[in-house]
Image 1 (cartoon, helix red, strand yellow):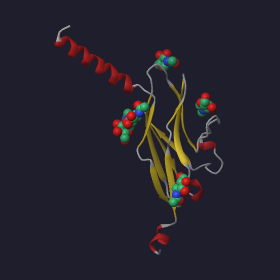
Image 2 (cartoon, protein in one colour):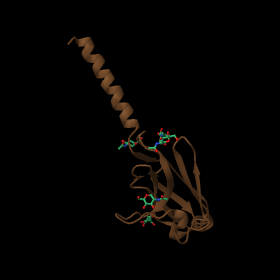
Image 3 (cartoon, helix red, strand yellow):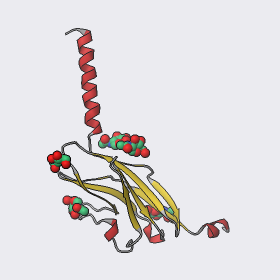
Length: 140
Ligand SMILES: *[C@@H]1O[C@H](CO)[C@@H](O)[C@H](O)[C@H]1NC(C)=O
Ligand SMILES: *[C@@H]1O[C@H](CO)[C@@H](O)[C@H](O)[C@H]1NC(C)=O
Ligand SMILES: *[C@@H]1O[C@H](CO)[C@@H](O)[C@H](O)[C@H]1NC(C)=O
Ligand SMILES: *[C@@H]1O[C@H](CO)[C@@H](O)[C@H](O)[C@H]1NC(C)=O
Ligand SMILES: *[C@@H]1O[C@H](CO)[C@@H](O)[C@H](O)[C@H]1NC(C)=O
């Protein structure tokens, strides 16, 4: 085989590899650690990739995932009712907007999506920390 042919095959192989990687299961978070002031609104951003062979059926966020335990949509989690808003688009971005942040919101937040095949969760997720009011902070 000529050297030219070999390098051409290498290029083709690389190209195929890159394409395959782009179609892998993955979740990327914009930030892994967030800090919010009590009472404020915080936005957590994720994007994701998945194989072309499946379609996404459901997207949601959850807290403190435990292996082998059915994931609970954050909107159905006690204490979060009415404070959770999802913002998604067709470019595989999916954000969580949490309002009126409380101290008890200090949890790990993970994005999960279900498909016609298996599901996938981005772990570890985003760690949220909540501080007192700005006023209290400036008086310390
Ligand atoms: C997921 O995406 C991130 C950032 O785009 C990348 O660094 C990481 O290697 C990817 N993981 C997999 C399993 O493809
Ligand atoms: C996902 O977000 C990361 C970091 O913000 C960015 O580098 C990447 O291009 C995004 N991927 C997609 C598919 O939007
Ligand atoms: C995914 O959606 C496309 C377009 O609606 C459809 O043609 C295809 O059959 C679906 N694939 C699966 C695995 O459901
Ligand atoms: C997503 O898939 C998981 C695992 O199969 C299942 O427990 C969960 O109920 C599904 N969630 C939704 C909203 O479909
Ligand atoms: C920050 O929040 C995480 C949970 O999201 C918690 O485990 C940790 O103790 C918090 N750190 C501080 C300094 O409060």
